[in-house]
Amino acid sequence: MFGWSINLFRIRGIQLAVHASFFLLLAYAAYEGWQAGGWEQLLWSVGILLAFFACVVLHELGHSFTAMHFGVGVRRILLMPIGGMAEFDGIPRQPSRELLITLAGPAVNFALAALLWAVVGVADDDYPANAVGFGQLLLHANLLMGCFNLLPVFPMDGGRILRALLATRLPYLRATFWAATVGKVLAVIAGLIAAFYFHNYLTAFLFAFIYAAGAAEYRAVQRRDLEDARWRAMANRLYPTPPVIDEPPLLGP
Ligand SMILES: [Zn+2]
Image (cartoon, rainbow, N blue to C red):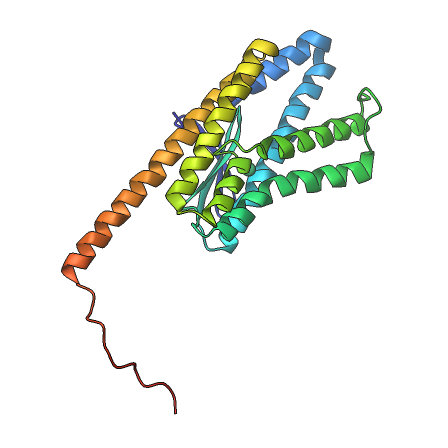
């Protein structure tokens, strides 16, 4: 499902790629803008969309650079119409590291929002059609992006934070199970509210996608745990644990 992507350029070795469906979104934004007010509005809509996704890339780079700091390889960042996804070689199972890697994404959004607030301030009620309005719109988009990602719906950032917190007390697989379960329940509730109350079917679809992604990631963790257990059992058969020595080894002088 993640095929059909186009590689753009590399940032510190990380390949930035765009899913083909992203161009449909771009075309849709251009069309909507054109309908609303010709060339000027077209450029505005496309500009906002590109700036918004530049912030998505910065959010993913926040995760990626923190992960790289802990020695985790980052293969690529894939941009899709529903957002971005950084592909790691493996997520560290130390809760403190996962916590920092996860927090770094929304932290970038809040930093960008603070920066924009210092430069352009907050809009009164409507965004003026100029650079200031553009900045104010982007400020709100970053606040929304940061907060939305902190919803505890696994595997979104908030759900990962919940998993990391649970993993300080529970085994990793149990922690993932509970984070995924809480995430699924919340995704169903949020999806139903989006569809039947707000009639926002795109958001409902987004939550359906997050539900499926959460279930898939739990299964992946489960599979890895089973494989690890199998390897451990095999290693134990091949190299039985050495007998316990009664005499303690001599220490120092
Ligand atoms: Zn994130």
